[in-house]
Amino acid sequence: MTLRGVSGAEAAALTKRLGLEAEDDYGEAAVRRRAQALEEKLRQEGFFEARVAVQHAIRDLEANRVNLEIGVEPGPKYVVQFSGVAELGESDLRAGSPSRTQG
Image (tube, rainbow, N blue to C red; front, side, top):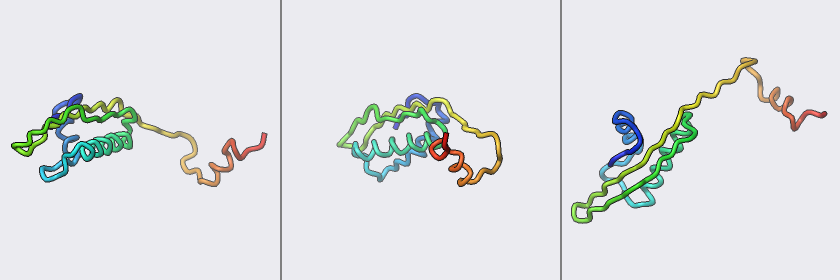
């Protein structure tokens, strides 16, 4: 398997996270689901523009192998920070919501 668009160290880590093992199903739909799951994990970690897609899957039926090429574009990592009151309860947030206030 080859990951395109990331450095060697990143590729090794992402390959592990992709979770494809020798005994796994390498059908087109299964591999696409794994790629989508990795993309979602990256987005949950703050890479909101991440894209992971199978670019090529070459099957060698005689050797019972699949050579995968997966494109990875993690994009920038975003960190969301809030400032202000350290602890604001949900009821306080709801009370201040524009849909709840009368104008």
